[in-house]
Image 1 (cartoon, rainbow, N blue to C red):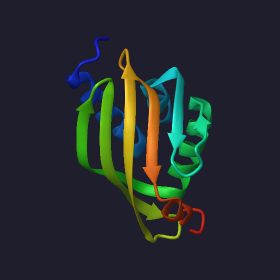
Image 2: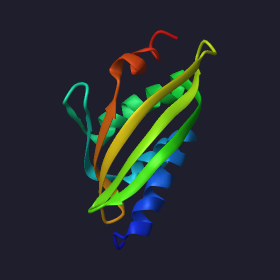
Image 3: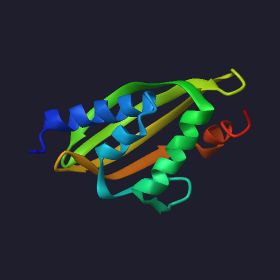
Length: 128
């Protein structure tokens, strides 16, 4: 698949929709086999399988997930996205967390995802 502005934006939408729908197989299909996922709060690179484990947990503890994308821009080799992830925690309380992604894409799949978020906000999911 040729990497074009249109294909980057289509992949971004596909990835977000897969997470909103808790479609782990589709999430995995968005990643290149050797993709790495990095978060600002721990400076550790995860493998795809490690990231999928976290996402499986997230879809169990955050219901009615919605990515409210405020900005998504194509950059050389990928895209940048700013969004607020919202939903309901298991105790019924509302949850909202702003985040930013810098995503590198090759051959139509995510090869690197860097996520910037406030870990204090993310930790409220474990308190629900």
